[in-house]
Length: 423
Image (cartoon, rainbow, N blue to C red; front, side):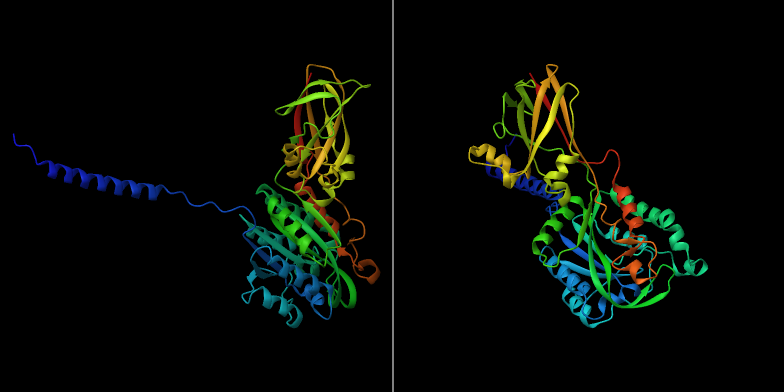
């Protein structure tokens, strides 16, 4: 039997090898995974409510124009900004944010018919997806449609808590289920123009102080990041701020092995081991936590001291000190422990006075608490006279309570830490 020439065999093998390699390359190319989006804010959508009730903020020299212009400009330093107007359906402001700032000073923008606030929040909330953060500026006046007020002029007062609050609650409960949180900034501004009271009667105001609000809506970590950056950039600060969280409790912590240490013990993984403690000779240890994503008031030492709850059925454990990172003495810290400190914002120091069993489980919780500034001084249920409405918003207490109740529950905590004590 004749054998094929060696050269021909090598040539056939070479051709087959090229074909297989080519197929392999095609398979690899087909299997290539799409690139994941980098963390952080990708873009910002800024919505301005343009119902007729907003018109008075745009006439004359008002803090509204100053604050909104600065917010939009500074937002663009964080991420690209798109401006939208909204009364019914949202409409993109195609000329861009720079022209929007110019138009605030020169062009009547708020001329549309009013819309129900919970529907506006729905439209804005639906845009806050992925790495997008959405903002809404509005006077936040809860109201039934004009036709309903004509039938019953008292409907807004009679049903603001039962109906309008429930609508707001339902809308924000839906956002919470999607992991979306919100922050509200409260401002005051002179108002020059027609004001509509809860009965839809017109009042001509000339420079009267009226509140307005900017809502920030998006993933909690993105909202927290935007709040921090704007706080550094902004000159015109809000008079009040309230944050609503949605992403669950913080659970990460670092155990320090020498910082604030008292008594005999050592760190072993996530436990305090070989601990000896009694009332006359207690042991103390410290943990580092990063609370940077919490509302500013929840990061205050006094708030933490007042609200932190420690549970340890088999031990006596107490919180003895709360320190912000900047107040911690680092003179004696070694490099490894200094690194742990730098990746946290707070140091919590605990005292162990008794350990009744060989091991004890310790749970530390910081329950969610919301500031209630809006209930005292910012809300009114009768806005027909200057003294009753001065720098107050009709039914604001019901709007804010609706949002608060959507986010707050008995199991809602800012912080939940679990660690062990061992003899």
